[in-house]
Length: 163
Image (cartoon, rainbow, N blue to C red; front, side, top):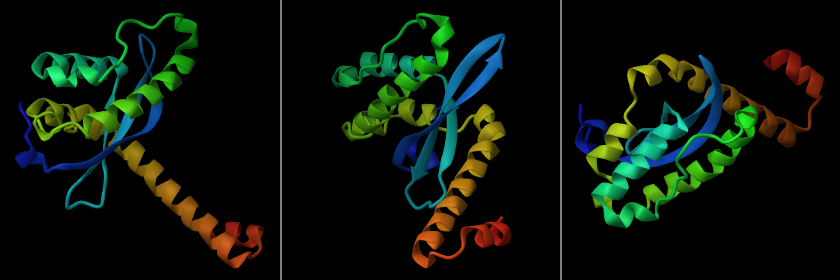
């Protein structure tokens, strides 16, 4: 199924939201990407492995020679015992990749391949509630911290009342 800007709405921003550890025969990590579309205030979340980003990168380089500047390292992990450290390092690479991808000319950043990749899959819809809970918790926590910094009230009292 091909997804287009017209069917999903233009992506106003995509940023790396976090990393999540998973197990299927072995431990691996998925990267959570927060996607905000024009005319929407609520982000959607997709969960992708690094290998999926690498495949997108390779396909874009084949279709659009100017997309070859989007560099992601490909290949298997070296030292499977340090999977978390590698995932954290790749998080920074993916953050740069996302910023660069959406700053590319429209023929690349708005192409069907990009929109299909960033369209929520069934897997994403199944796991989205985890990301939404995190967003709500972060929002409540930032509101709470802002309240404390403004009022300088007794923290223990606020904790017992708010939580």
